[in-house]
Image 1 (cartoon, rainbow, N blue to C red):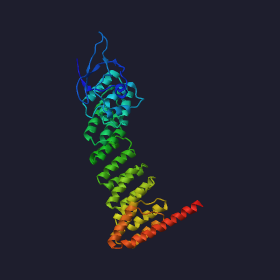
Image 2 (image 1 turned 60 degrees about the vertical axis):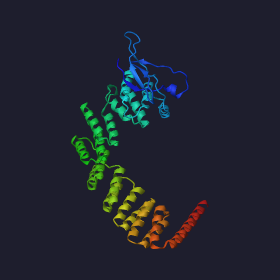
Image 3 (image 1 turned 90 degrees about the horizontal axis):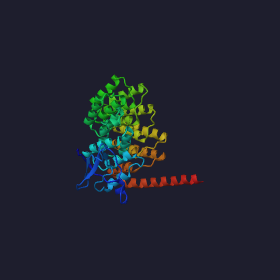
Image 4 (image 1 turned 135 degrees about the vertical axis):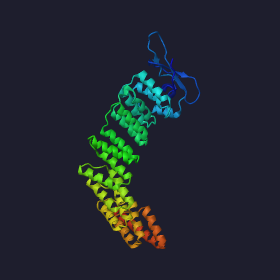
Length: 407
């Protein structure tokens, strides 16, 4: 007689309702009974129950254990009502386990033996765990890949490697990749791109380049995601010229990176104060058919301000106004800060007046910056009065506009 320990779980009907008794369902396989023990989680020990000579043993999924906690009850209530019974039988037990619980493997093995699931059943369980954002998703997927009933394919391994990549578990991802290759599955472009993206996010430029070259050598197509992962690897390595060259190569093939990739490269140039590089990327963004938004424009303004080219920065803001794109407070504050560095108060006031004429209200950030500047000049009271008069004037103009619209 073989005995394995799995967490004792209470019947859904008994725990979540006040029914005095619960109907016991059984199916052919091994039998599970409650092991008497104390604590939040008791154990179920499995034994084969011989009902008659030659009759197959039965697996009792309705065996009950310790009281469920409120969070466990809530998790069980949250299960999809469309789950088949065989999937629900497993899920009501899985949701009560913790990550790393040694009983999960035994529970899954019992489920496979008792319920004989098909691939569709496995996928429903994985989908439910993903919807619940369960930390056990990875462990269940790892076990499923080893089961014949799951009928694993390359895409299943790709999903597992993608999960590992998001968690920066490079060693586990590589182990899964080698396990996939040992089973004879081919490495396709999607799998290699997932690996390259993982190395890119981990800051491992050399491995990302190796995978990129492998995709090329295998003659596999390079899509925008593969290019984007390699561009991001160069950006993270502060090799902006290489990233820009790769983007130009993409454009020659009429392939364009995603907006976030362009934005990352523009941000890198902007923070370095490289206005020429920022302008080139900004032009490339428009060439790719992406309409610049306020955030992209702010990055370009920042690049010009850091490099001391204030006139070009104000020109960017004027272009924004010409296409009815109002500059954010950050844009205005950047220009004011740049004017303060060169002590050009008069030009700063002219800039603010121009914004006011175009209906742009000055927010808190530029207002505080301006007040601090005036404070250092010792003209706070005079400016406060001027700003008060300006505010009243703008209020009167707005009231006049509203009155005209009502007429």
